[in-house]
Image (cartoon, rainbow, N blue to C red; front, side, top):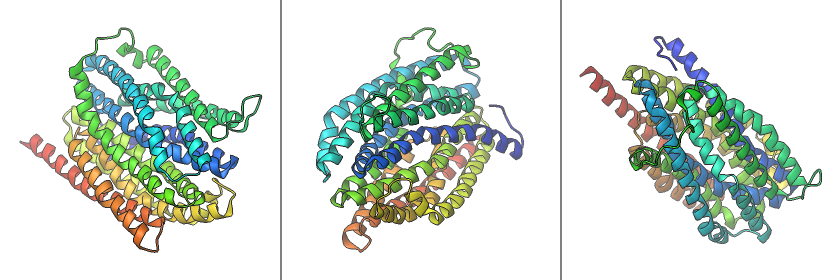
Length: 452
């Protein structure tokens, strides 16, 4: 990361950081994407089971790992402010927090997984597959959260290509493990959709081991001497990580868990409707990796500029990221709408599931536009370390406006299950508007402080 003087230089540096993040995010999500697709090819029950299990796991994972996203702005502010000597200590405290979060995740799963699945009106086989899939994934919880800390450190240094290469090396292995364990090849047991959970867990361990080795052995990461000694746990630093990270994690949780809530509410429909809904949601989640990547890149560059006191440069980066995300979303909306039938065939060969999936993908296409604003704006606000108001806005937009509206449309109109998607789109749009207003207020405050 370097200081830039012109808009062209900013665009160049932003793309240099963004593109590897985007590739990494798409590759990481592709593990769940391939889990769903390959399980769907095994059977409709496995598609529904893996999709339901994934929809329960993702908000927990993204919400709790969202807490660890605070490592990126913390390290970014330290480096931007010329306090490199404090970076190693902060990252190691993040490692400790990640271990505590892992333990909390196991406790939550032990207490809640079976009761939550019991609330859903699922076929017994679908419920079994969903339960066993999440259990299989759980073997990768510890490396998954530890990798989140290491990636936050790596990305804060602007070395996003390193994260990209680590994930790209692991993705083909994940697909191969899926093939072997889902379909029972080369003497391994035929586990169906559950096998994809074990495949992902093994891949998470490989990614962590590779990331830890690179941080330990290769410059510029090795110059920070992570893992050379284990500092004592310092709760004041934990407090800094959690005070910044908890609102981030909760914002992400409220955004992602609403999809799980919709899945829970849609359990009153047939297995084919659930499978089609989850297939469309899986695909839209894949396309969401683009605005999410822009969001993460904005956190890095804005954190660096704000740490150095260059607030005008931070504002220019926010404009670059938001307009870039909107442009990509417009193209994505047209592509999904045009080729929705083709995309539906990726998930199933069942004629009813195909028709329903294509219908849900129409709404997924519209989804892209709101996501293109709200996700980058959230990333920009994290770069400013402004997270508490963002959390409240997110909760109100999704849970007070979006979900109740979707439930009402599904129950009292002819939209049926599609009504939930209309509610989701409405909630996202409200979030995009209110968060944009908040970003403008934060930027004005920093700019006026600089001029004063």
